[in-house]
Length: 447
Image (cartoon, rainbow, N blue to C red):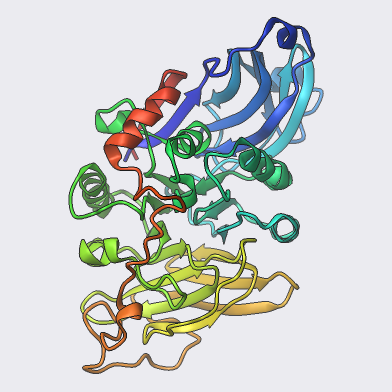
């Protein structure tokens, strides 16, 4: 399996002579991406293009010069400092240095070995856009909830083309992102125009070199311990094209991946939803749920509708799903409760997920600290906290009620928040090329 890491190490924004003379300041970060069992990318953006470095050492080894190592990065405003040769399941401390001065610090733990039997815990949230006070409160609550890493279901900014919105996101999330890696899928608000796509590629885009290309892509995959995550662009037409070919290829690889127990897909717009957007017609029309089920994907995580929903769709392709879109954006009502729905509530929240052997446990936390939902399942079994699911001829093969066309699929015209219909793959590749010019290092690794 390709492990994707990209390093944006060129000066994307040239600094003026006056700016160069000033003391460089952190604009974004530091934040962590692509943490594996042996590597990490520490990313940060400065207000001017200058060299920088990151010093790493095992936690608790302060003052031990022999334990420290420094990775130097060339002159750039956007830095992605890639360090390899780390030990699995090990805590590290790091310091970002600019001009010899410490600009930021953090701490992280590497992923366990692929064959490790230890439990894995991660937090899931999404649709944080435009929710400054609420988003900040959720960040505080998540910071107090131990986890190995974070998963975001998309729409992290209100306007993907707005530099101010990206700045606000990183400022609000900084206490969380400096110490825990973030893995996320792209949302429609990160696809509103070319600048939106370029910004997503700059900060979180997936490297396409492993698939024979050179561009940054809005989809990718990663592994943490015995779990593999597939991050999908849910706003794409999945009937054909590079994204579908990629997904089929990666799912097939995962079928025989050594030590793999869990397969989890993350997509912004779910194939099933009781919120006003309804199910994702692009996924349903392309039979992506059937494809995921055929390759034993255990769970689909999504957002888009600003609600909490947990379900298990029936029919010929049973699959479990969780919608977590209560990260800060204005809440939506529960409009079209589906036969597949097991629990749904319109409230601000985040979800804690623990994988332990073949058992999964989730706890959904409301913003006020109360428990919204607590449930789990063992692979191949239904949710363990529910009454038996409804069955019978009223359900179509996707587990939805065909009598309600809004619930059956969404034609909501919300591919992007602006007037455009969406960024096609070709357009994405073109706009991502702006950032690709700054890629200095590309790492490819098979699981």
